[in-house]
Amino acid sequence: MLRSLFSGISGLRAHQTMLDVTGNNIANVNTAGFKTSQVQFQDTLSQVVNNAGAPQAGIGGTNPAQVGLGVKVAGITTNFQQGAAQLTNRATDMMISGDGFFVVDKGGQQLYSRAGAFSFDALGQLVTPDGGMVQGWSADAAGEIDLNSPLRGLQLPVSTLMGAAPSTTADYKGNLPSDAAVGTVLNRQIDVFDAAGGARSMNLSFTRTATGWDIAGSVAGTTSTQTGSITFTTAGAIDTLTFPPFPADAAAGTSAIAVDLTALTGFAELETVAAGAQDGRAAGTLQAFAINSDGTVMGSFSNGLKQAIGRVALANFANPSGLEKSGSSLYAPTVNSGDAQVGAAGTGGRGTLAGGSLEMSNVDLSAEFTNLIVAQRGFQANSRVITTSDEVLQELVNLKR
Image 1 (cartoon, one colour):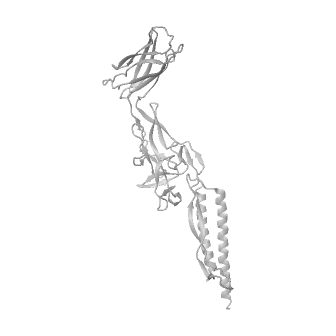
Image 2: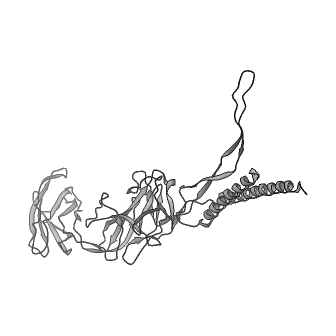
Image 3: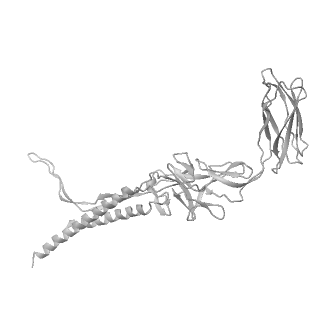
């Protein structure tokens, strides 16, 4: 039989594969996080008709004569070029800007994905559309995240609480007027919290004396009181300051509270002294959340505070093209992809995260339609080779009538 007949058949098979890959790319043009694939061809073995000859005295060398035996698909590679961003404004949608993959646990198997279209299930678990659990690290009660702890499914149940914390420090800032009349009293209040998160008013009273200011303080509903004094230099800086911490009141549930007055000044004609901040808080329930660029999930609580709830994990690979597509926009590691290097976004070559956005498919329709034409013409040309070979065989058969 003619070699060209089988070469044409191999060409049909190869270009059919190219059509299949191109068709799949076009079918996924709107699939979030989809990465296009490309077919690579290479020739098969060649039959040697004449071997090469070495040059000799008076005779030149000759090149080998070979007849190719067709084409085959050398590989189908995945192009991990960044796709365009699509703004969705959904808090659970995430996009990786740069390299990296989301880590997903599906049925006990750890898989990886570029598609960040996530949502919450009935248990508050962050999941993919087909139920895979997005992996990361959970924060402790103080909002601290240990990146060295094992990965676990991220969970944000509606019952998430921020616990109460008693106040232990408070500060006052501003200016006490040095030209105030002796006997002038300035009262300033700030809310502090007990161990149960109950708010209690802490009042500081500044009374002008001949040399400076006397300070008296108390915490409402407790036995905690304190006195002290402050004087200033002629330049308005603190000269002397005495004001010990408020003692703890175990019955009222308050801790010792240290009051920082070192930011006060003593210039003339300015009465700006005011309470600053304190470190206690009431308990609060989770109301909303947002994703930071480093993957930290920041929760907004009913007590007006924000605190880290968890952090999304990302993984990267030495050879991402070696990953195996597992369906549902998921990838599985192989022996040629290397092991997953799991860490936080923005570190170790991993990209950053953008919340409220999705990565669109990186399929280039103009290139794919061109590939369709190339594959179609290649298929037609190889079919013509088969037709021509058939006609030659027909002529051979017709030699004997």
